[in-house]
Image 1: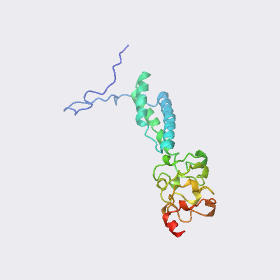
Image 2: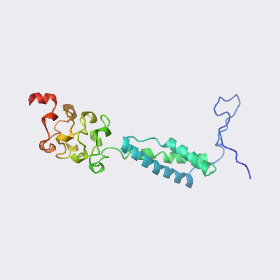
Image 3: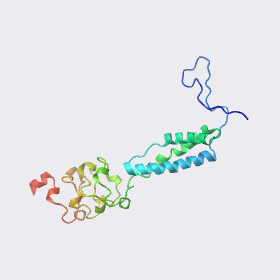
Length: 218
């Protein structure tokens, strides 16, 4: 039985070649290697499922997905070595290529109108969970923001992008006095005509919730 030598890069892989010297890659171009095999396809699909779930969790938790190709490549090399697969390098390329789609799969699902009212637990949106200007109009489904989804004083002026809150984004009687940080609603935060009678709960607009300029008027 022929002994298998450890596979490693040629000695001249990381230096300039001498005149007339030839570089022989690990995968000989003159040979055919197994690439698309049941093993590589199945492991690749498993990587997609695993890393799509991880990316979806992070996407919903911190608002950002990650590039999965590098960790999948490392796992593929380790798994192929542990299983003592022959011609594993070429199959690892397929595993990485399939598995690397996981981030793109999730990113395409966390887009416009992705978060509806039914996806948010009551009181889940608190000020510490929102980055500055994190909430824009396209991220919120029409009528998704209802009173029960906002903790008291959760939404400050720095958490809302200019023009993000339109009439269609707020369910009737959602905004009550206890839901707004003092002086958080300024003119540039509200689109023209966005606030109509049905959007304001009875007694919601109290004196201490008005901007200094309005205090002078009243």
